[in-house]
Length: 613
Image 1 (tube, rainbow, N blue to C red):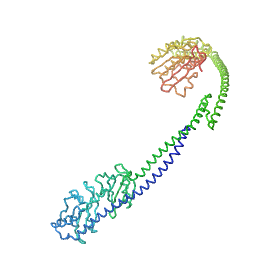
Image 2: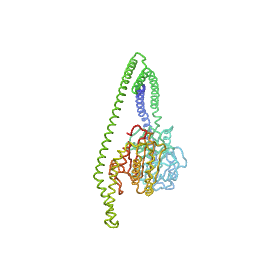
Image 3: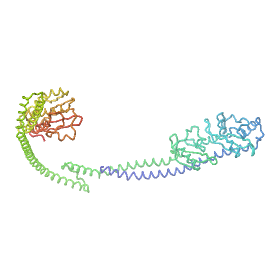
Image 4: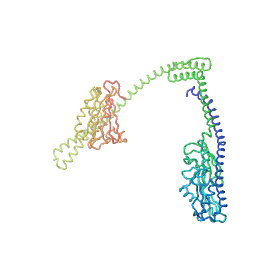
């Protein structure tokens, strides 16, 4: 990182981080305080709603008990019951219907209800009557004298309903049932939920009893809040996310004596608006501080970072070997003194580097001369030893084997002429003659390994000629084995220095090895091209079975072969290798098992001054 960038970064940290830190702490403190304050208000609102729910239900029970006490319900017949019950129904506007039943829950007379809606009363339908009959707490009222059933809702009303039951007297067997309307609670919930808030009343199972008409249901977080409040039986306040995706600060308060609960919520964006203002202000002043530090950093960089940057460029130039570069020596302060010292050091380095270069060039020239002389001497010694070893080997073989083998061949030939070929002895003599001739061929190939070293440098020749002669020699084998040939000879191939017959023998051995590797046919590619004008490259590629990696190091050893054809003794590549080395060339083999083999031969051009390394 550049010095100016580090300076700007330090100034930004000093100027911006404290603002962000203090702003973050202030935002956290304000949010916690608002959570406590607004959450307390929401808890109080939820508590008031819970008390209103309790008061409404208990008032309905008291009014129903009073009506059961002053009315002669035990003596009323089916005809008079409906007329008598219509009196308290008109007086109690919170009741949707009244019905008198016996101790088995059977209605003594049809239920009495008003067809008019309003004043807290809800419309009675066949569906609501069916719900009422299922939820009526008949058995609980018979045992306790008065009972409150579980709340329920109808789809067309936002406020819920609850079934009430009281005895017609202390020892009476009849019960007075009523359906209490919670529409008043629905209106209170609508009022609390106005302007984007949340408010609803739930029963002991957490199901909504009274909520807004467009209430879509409870989210997972709201159900968790209700479940926690119901299990604890105490007030709970925290932020929850509704089904609409909006975050609310919601409070839960239990409804005393009923086991229900009330939830009142307010949008978190409104509840924590002052804290959000603090956060926005923090970001604004952080940007202002960043702008101020940027201006200050630019001012400082002109006086500090620019001289340091020039010194850095000078150091980089020295590292790259540009000793002539100098830096400006402006000013009399420490930076100016440092610039003058740097220029003096650069001058000294330039002088010493020139001296070192002169010494290095002289030393390199002497080392190259001695290395060349040493390599020439080493090559001469190696070649002399190899010629001596091969000469001794060939002379020993010629002396020890060739003369006796010649006599054996003569005797076997005379014996074969005298003995009929169809006899067993004649067949054995001819087999012995064949093997003796094979031994003579091996001795002849060994002799060739010595003769090619003693043949001299040869004469300039066109490498295309021995290549075409070798291809002509193996053309019948190509056809008999079903091998396709692709020959690519580049134009303008330079001449090489050597012996045409020996080079032809190299190409022939390579082609026969390739054909042997493809007994079931395949493709043979032969190429001849120029390598940078100083050498000739010959390549022979087959699509045979390839050579295993473990055998590649021994492939040029005498008498080593991977072929199982009779008559092959493993001298073809060895002879080719010796011939190429005698021509100061190189031979390289590349093979992948199952994918074929490529043999590349590189020979120096006749005009090249040096042999290949």
